[in-house]
Amino acid sequence: MTLLEAAKADAKLADEAAAELDALPDIADSVLSFEGLMALEIPERKLLLPFLPQASNTMIYGPPGVGKTYFTLSLAVSLSCGVPFMKWDVPSPTGVLYIDGEMPLALMKTRLKELHPGETIAPLELLSHEHFFQMQETDLALCDDYVQSRIKVYLQSREDIGCVIIDNLSCLLPTVREDKRDQWAQRVMPFLLWLRRRQLATVMLHHSGKDATVQRGTSSRRDALDTEIRLQKIGEETEGAHFGVHFTKSRGLYGDDITPFEARLTQDNPPTWACLPIVEGNMERLLTLVQEGIESVTEAAEELDLTKGAVSKIAKKLRNEGKLGRGPELRLL
Image 1: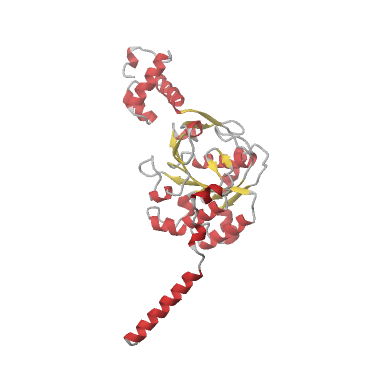
Image 2: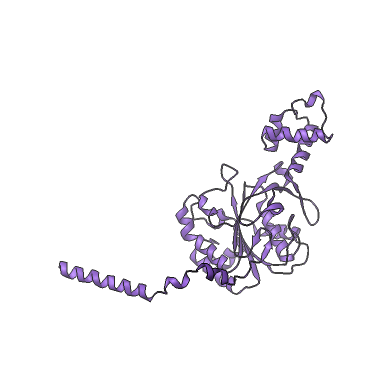
């Protein structure tokens, strides 16, 4: 090809590209003036819970075994039955699709049966990795185009589903590297945006990293989140689901709805969540430690996962209330 022919070919390609651009809608149609925005009627997002609006993304994270699945199973039951969840009331029942990538189906059945009050008002549906493989003969991987497309088709036919719970990212995104922003942005984020545009509230479960105060992997996952909740383990493993609930990101939420609190799943039938302010919970546990013989601030701080200064303040408050003695055996507290 001569230089002249190459130039003509390049010019033809440029003309074709320009024609394609001309055929696209004018971006001016998508730009809102201030007056246009003020005049626009935007439907108010329905609140499923004070921290869970329609068309939102929420992340729940914490260490393994802290009780994340109990948290979200209880959330799913409360939404579908219209009963309170922890310290929040459910304004109206909402259908839930629970996507599980970890639990054995038999154990999932047992837990849901334990938590369920007996009457479901809105749909409560389970997409289990185990049952999915039996029926589809493929893994339930949310990074797979086929799986995403099947879920989209299903949700488009189910307007009674208002919330999707994804438990958990590590199991359901097996080929997406947690530390790679591009893989998350290319293979997962478009699916989450599709769910949001369908006005669905999406709740995702994930593990915390080596630093227990942050979620594991790339921080870019936080960018599109409306709410992020950290579950901090309290007590021994034998106590079951017992943790502090801390809001580490919240858009448009203030006050009591996002104040940290302590939650413990009781052994009642059905189990219920006992919730109290973090300070009160720490006071109770410090009293228990003292009764068990702990005398030093350092030991108490390690047991409570608090700073020594925080332990000293709690001890002072207990003394002022007459709940903690002043004998020499407690001098270090």
